Image 1 (spheres, rainbow, N blue to C red):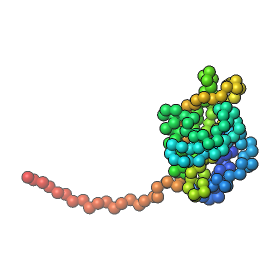
Image 2: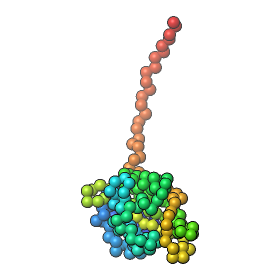
Image 3: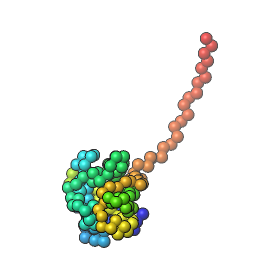
Image 4: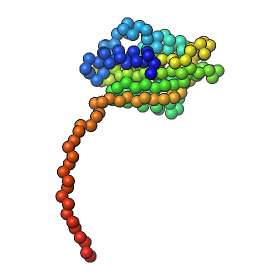
Length: 185
């Protein structure tokens, strides 16, 4: 896990204040000044629409377009779209952080590796309906030679997990009464 991802996870954890997830209002962008260029916030409209409410300049430059109001899922194709949608939906449902790794491609086929962190946030409704995200390049960006990313594919997923679903220890059930029955027909 990249150091920036660890920094964001620690910040998110510190903002929870004993709750399952922090609210959007608990997140102060200035606290994350070293990460701002690669941060984003998604808002869930429905399962097929996780819209950028905020996107850092690094992310916008990487794709050579403004990401605000765009659907995050539109960055993905085929099975990758289904997998990243399921990852976001499970991040919001559990709620707990998740990460993914990806390869991003320029038109000429040049690639960079990236790590994507997805952390749930509560919106005004009180429900986890937003995602604080980090798109962390793991390769040198100069490999793209200024060309924008035009596609990407998932190379790994680390789904959300939370200890709250640990089953409660149960005492063993008593042995059922044993009765021998014979059928001599």
